[in-house]
Length: 244
Length: 278
Figure (tube, rainbow over the protein chains, first blue to last red):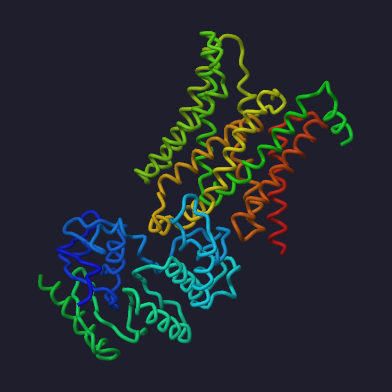
């Protein structure tokens, strides 16, 4: 059995008096590929932010790599669904990807290793050609790829991707699937998706998030079988909520 | 124009040389910090810091005039007040975001109110106009050293921490995930802004500071796609606006601060028209 990298014990979270997640328990092992699904507003992004230590549980305990999430967040590559930024901010694609290398030195100066890692990440996401374009001039899909490149440029031990395929065309999606599968040989990957349009080569677990969280180990099945499982589970969770 | 150059080299008119030297030196800090202020959208915080400085200047003059405390130089108190305001605004903004605009308004007005009361209590007549609208022509040679030191400090900090400050301004959440102390960098940005504002008050005065801080950066922002280039261009533009403004104010005998701002404002409109035309 691989080592546990994420452990939620009786975790609840609420924004003020609005409960978002309730009594969440699950563990995720090293190098798993975890698919996170659930309806809008069900708490998927909140779950990722708890893992990153950007939010704190009101109850329960979260361990990431056996530690407090805040302490280890630098080991995690995170690609948000979208970022709030000033459309007129003068910044290029390459500048954004370089941010993935920050935090190592005072002042944030970059060296040869940083430049190499950034070049590699941009090549993998197929954005080398647009490296000097203003970030604000990009399409939704291009921005998504830039944010994923930024997440992997730091050489993370775990990758959290929030709807990475939302604005991406089929060709890029195939490519992204290959890149993520390749990374997944070394590191744990958690990916939020709205629907099941994106299927990785293997999925170890599916987390269904809708206020409650259910985990399904799915080591042997992919594609339609997984989709079927989601639908079943979503109904089940909703039913539970209605009843109680 | 030739008159202006003659006046510059005339040994009897050192003040004009000092004024231009100060303007050109400070442009470096103005351009760098102005670009941060524009992209992080904190020009109203800069406005509050600037206006609160009158409180410090007033206190300094009051202590000098009433108690003969020679060391209570108004500029020393201006620096201290600017830093205090920056830290108050920064702290409130970080701890209670919804109250941000209230505290900005309060610091702005209370600082001015205190300043005017202190000026009233100071013996002799002190004209607040020169502080409100600037009088670059009262700069002494000894001031230049202080100005140069502040200028170097601000520019060095602004450039040394460039990558981190850029990340914090662009995407605070991601910067936090990378282990950057986002709150520290935000306060640092406000402190750098406060020091820059003190320099600017000497040139254009308390009321006009926001324009000189933001217009060069705003013009530069229309023509650049990288923050660093925006800084370089806004340094150059600051220097040009100040030089032309000084020359014009000398030529037609206008007050220097407002003349510089009119030049900057005119350039801003022109650049917007050019940009639309393209």
